[in-house]
Image (cartoon, rainbow, N blue to C red; front, side, top):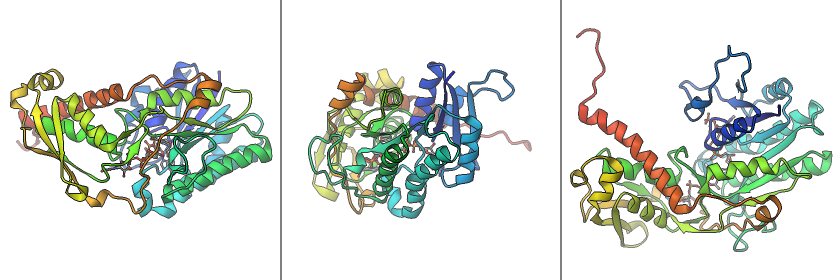
Length: 381
Ligand code: NDP
Ligand code: GDR
């Protein structure tokens, strides 16, 4: 049985990858951080009781900033494959936490690679580094391939640039099987709530169920190549199954704007939008509400929808602008198609629909509590 170690297992990709590897028969070990609240929501369905004899899903407390901890875990697990997914992964937040981001996202992978080397596992343990299309930043070429020059535009991307090159260097210096997946944005119903896609689907779902009132966004013109996380984790595994380690761009080859994303998600809910104004004054205004579509999705009578034609659904708030923005990203995944036989399965429209559906379900649960007037039981009553 192959043994995999996943850092960042509590994150979006970690959860999908763990599920994927378990289905392939792997023993899966993951590193989770100590937190004051439970932080394992995304992997709770995979949990196996520590008292079970033949457990294949095992979590270890750890942190990418703690080298001795990483050495101990790697020694204990003796992994065939290490997937380094852990990161402070929010680009905007990295401007506020630049040093911490560098510590986790740049030095973290170095610590992990060193742990493998110190323990003499450099010829037996394969290493995957979660690299990113953010490396292309101020793009030098469209579409971006494995040969497009990098131009990082945030502390996050600068840290990931170091991580990219240190993985290449350990491959060349020590003959390690280390490779970079240069992944373009990928989303899912378990995407973090502050990334733009999930922020949109969550806010729109909550709006039609009367739990909130539209949303504020930053740069509506940003263009991204959005795929589904479920498709992309398969690629992470495939990259570690080759004869020799190589770096690959993973993308769909299709590009949409943030504005397109809003319109597609709103359309899924039966809301049509028109855009008025420009720049910080731009607004997304509802032009029509398809009560039947809404009813199909939410279960609530469409006519009771609090959103009416003329309502402002989206407003621009400059607080979400970034000091330096990545305006456009579009990947060319030809190499991955040709060498690994990989193609993304989920279309943009299907992915948005799935995210909207799941957020509607979550919002319905909250709406039931609101309508039924849930009140915690008090022992003094
Ligand atoms: P998430 O933000 O959902 O998950 C990040 C994971 O890293 C979480 O498990 C988090 O733990 C963990 N983590 C953060 N800091 C530390 C630390 N100091 N020590 C240990 N673990 C830590 O990211 P995604 O799943 O979306 O992305 C996975 C990786 O892929 C990241 O490296 C990201 O930068 C990269 N990437 C992502 C893309 C995307 O579009 N999703 C595209 C390209 C690259 P906790 O749950 O406790 O916060
Ligand atoms: P990104 O994802 O920065 O590409 O990094 P994010 O969803 O945060 O932003 C995408 C684009 O949308 C614009 N935007 C907003 N973004 C957020 N978060 N919130 C807003 O309100 C908003 N309004 C507009 C942004 O300016 C940006 O242009 C993600 C992360 O997963 C990284 O870890 C990963 O490396 C890259 O994708 C590839």
